[in-house]
Image (cartoon, rainbow over all chains, first blue to last red; front, side, top):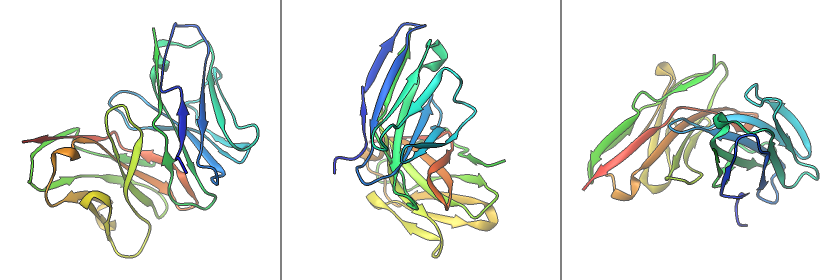
Length: 113
Length: 114
């Protein structure tokens, strides 16, 4: 078990471009979470999946953000028409159903210039 | 409203000294409580967690935390700090039915003086 994997680790993009991040959870975990962490702040919950179903979305997840988990395994988070305010660390975590602990990946650092 | 407050943004301690990081929470239901550590540019590593039972919980790397319901607190302690403990520490609260959906505090940055 290699833990939660995120790709890429770093992404620099120009304002207005679209970006997509990938998260591979721990293989037996059916719950997957996305968080956003801005500088000097704690992570903030964005959305979570149970298997392929997206069960909850935070109000932080604007219309420009979309997340998918098509086969209940890996997940993607896409940001369309990026803005400078989207610059942050995007963290993915996974847990087993009924599990009481989330395991985090190392995150994707997005910089919008 | 559900929230977590870490009153200290930055703490500096000398190596070998004791450490206490404060955490207060506001949560409607019985909380699950966590402490995570984050090194620069890295993800979060779980130090310890509290669900029920003994209010003093032991974690990895010699850390412990005490749950005090009357004070809505879950402070993290370590008797002797090592230089490698320098990092950002986050307290978080979650629901017992939803282990991965957490509310985090803003973090406490720990610096360790030689």
